[in-house]
Length: 118
Image (cartoon, rainbow, N blue to C red; front, side, top):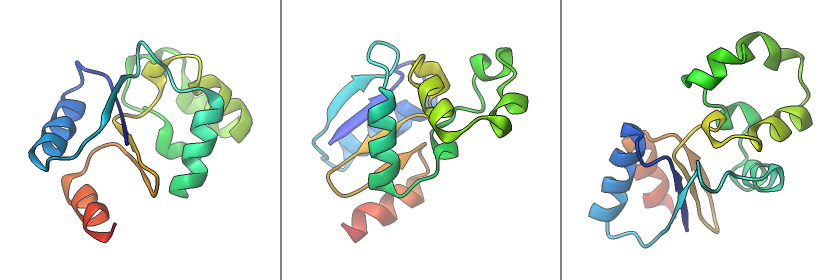
């Protein structure tokens, strides 16, 4: 299980604390130091049955600076995936990747439900 996070992100800190409290064993990965590749994002989309928009950090400064709210609707999934692979700060976090599922962002109830189902 891979926990992809930005250590300064408060949501990531909450998710990590939740995982540790549950005794979940995971590999920690800093999204800033080790940005997901386009191939990884595609594979996670497929594994999690998630649309590309679930991987876009719409609340980040870089998202606003690049005016992505305007640009993304005209971009293909391939172009968006390539863009996300250029900078970890464009990617929604945390991301939890397991053999069976992928979760983006942290909503405790959602994570609880998914863990209980698997």
